[in-house]
Length: 216
Image (cartoon, rainbow, N blue to C red; front, side, top):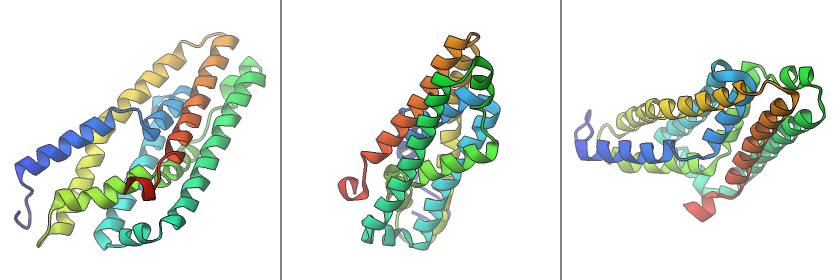
């Protein structure tokens, strides 16, 4: 493997692995779906950005070699993970509660979140996701290979991963928004908000069930 380039076979394997992961309903997908249901596709891009920034953060940590500390002290990451899970469950419960007890007007307005809130909640969720750590901190070096230029190849693959993930998350955001558009009555609005809250809760549970110790 040369300094600047990545072998075609390795690149195709990386793209295939990303495609399989990106279109599988994981925590990031569920988070984006839940956010798009309550806030629309436009604001869901803030949620997507939060996922991307967390992923790229772990890519940079991997390039700098700092990611080895995460695997050396997995209990520290477990604390981060459970803080993220707790926050997601809080958002899920709040969303479902608003859907069940608010009036139609409040149900449509109160559940709207700012782009900043969507960004940071998605960043917290993905930052606490062990599978994100494992892929970007452990798998990138495998695909990048050893030797001169490894760091550059890792960053190139990290950027490619974000590019490949965007169409998948956008598709799920559009589907979530389209489903939400069907909610025209108080009951249907409450149902869609409950679905959004359930998606957040499921994302939290998926993150909670994984760990660095068990998966690494």
